[in-house]
Amino acid sequence: MDKKTQLLKFGTVIKQRRIALKLSLRDVEKLSSVSAALITKLENGKMANFPKAITIKQLSDALKFNNELFILADILFEPKQIKESEIPVEDKLRELLATKTTLNSENINQIIYFVSGLEKLQKIENL
Image 1: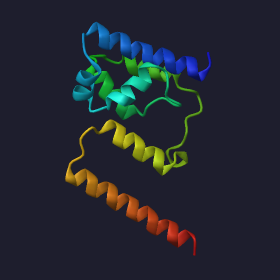
Image 2: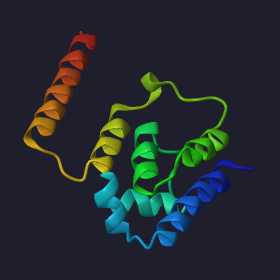
Image 3: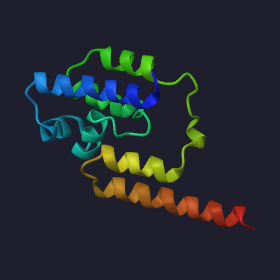
Image 4: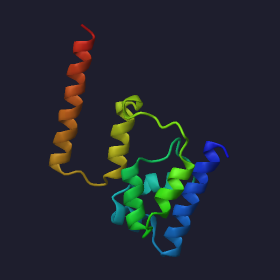
């Protein structure tokens, strides 16, 4: 099974559970802190990769899965996992923003601190 088919199957399971529980996308967004846009992409197989474990956990809790969603994800994940250090910072920030529908001032300050630290590191590396 190719990756696109795997992602679609994963999303189908999420969508079927959401519908069975009579929850709207916004309901799941509120329960999980995962944006409705990201949930829609998952349900429609429009993601390039599987979400991180924290996102799966948030959706799993909101949709009242026990370990089924994790088991399904583990089965569907490709054997070679991408190392955390290989994921571009921009992708990490996008996922953070997608999973946090509301950012408080502390979250925003942490992001700014993190990004400014990266900028300083890049300047040092370019010397």
